[in-house]
Image 1: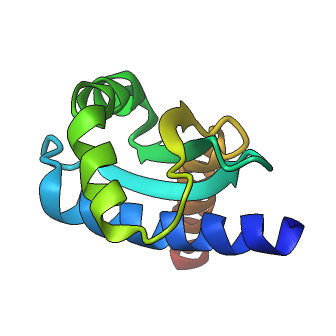
Image 2: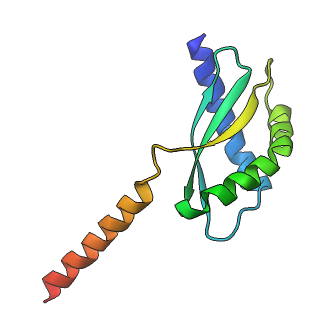
Length: 119
């Protein structure tokens, strides 16, 4: 059973990535990443975890997705050949929340090193 859930997770992630890329309009300079998919063992519901860059636009991105969730669910249902069809729910990925800040600090450290080498 766990093997089936893993396969369903992979399939949903793949198909939802395509749907979101092609059908959802996000504001300029916003990057949305599907980080993981967690389907319940009975295949009734699926939590889709998202990471947004910049992090300050997460609420706006979640509002856009939740506003279009019915249309996204319908598109997914047409692509999946399985029963039952899991109901999707979008969630913010909290584990990668600080990744953007870490990236900024690393870039700043690189610039500082180059400046000290040139002096």
